[in-house]
Length: 265
Image 1 (cartoon, rainbow, N blue to C red):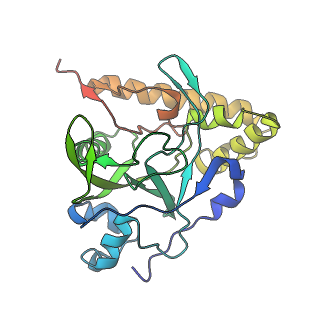
Image 2: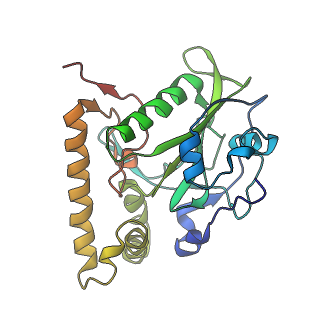
Image 3: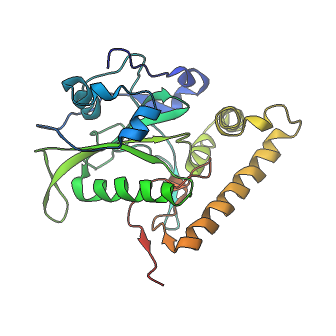
């Protein structure tokens, strides 16, 4: 892990309201369940490091890679007909960028945006996301990816006592529809929305950078990508389950696998 570096220069381009710098709360007695070695190699990890204590520490959030600034993102969301202004990464930490992919730990503990939650992910749902995100990628459907999964002795309570896990996942962007809703809150809303739109163009739509009407073109590009994504979902009978604005990607990716399902016919 000594030669592995992450880039967080993008934070300098974002208003500080959009994120909160914080640290993970490591799991007890973490152990590796699965590694997506081809993707780890593709994103710059040395395969010889994958058995090291440092790498397990990296997955568990207590080893900070060079250049990493762990942070949780803020966003709003329309959830089941109601607007919730202050959501955000309640159980995830963004670690930094490598090979144009943002790495994120899901289930890494409480953040500023956890509200009444424990910041944890259970093993059951983490395995589901690990498998389905890679299955969707295999089907050619734009999606976040899964790199690694660890289990632990840490107990969490849902309907019953379960074991906690952490999933390392990647995405070309974690900006959501709800990020723009968050930008529109309070004073200087036009300035913040414009700044976020410029950030999104640089990150996900660079071909629009020099367009005279780039913001209008951005709107239509996002709409087109989202239409294409949902058509691809329908082509395989995939049902997202939580299509709130905080779970919709501005880059046209499938994100946040929760209560998803596939139609049998």
